[in-house]
Image (cartoon, rainbow, N blue to C red; front, side, top):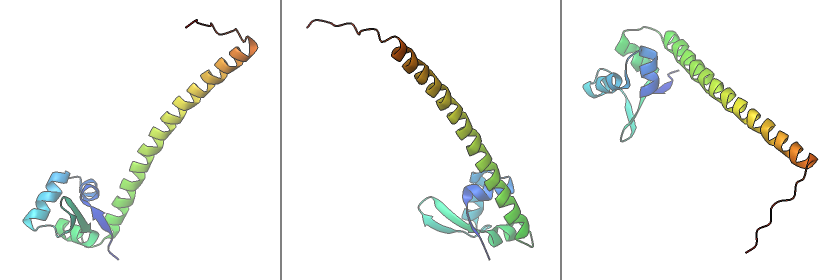
Length: 111
């Protein structure tokens, strides 16, 4: 069964730029369905034909690898964000403990 992919996914799979994929679509080399003014859906079988491949197995493998790579990048970003939040959490807890141990009165200002 054909899988539907975006221009960006086709670009990652082929090693070409989004611009090249769009040029192939405009020239008719790569059939695609336009689902909004600037968005196209490409069937993996059509991409294979445009590249001269006989099976979609290579395309599916490459597409899955592209998904895995993107997810690994997202995980790395989330881990960095979590580390930053953990550091902030520790600092807030330290400040809370310090305030609880020595509750100095807040300065009162007259109006």
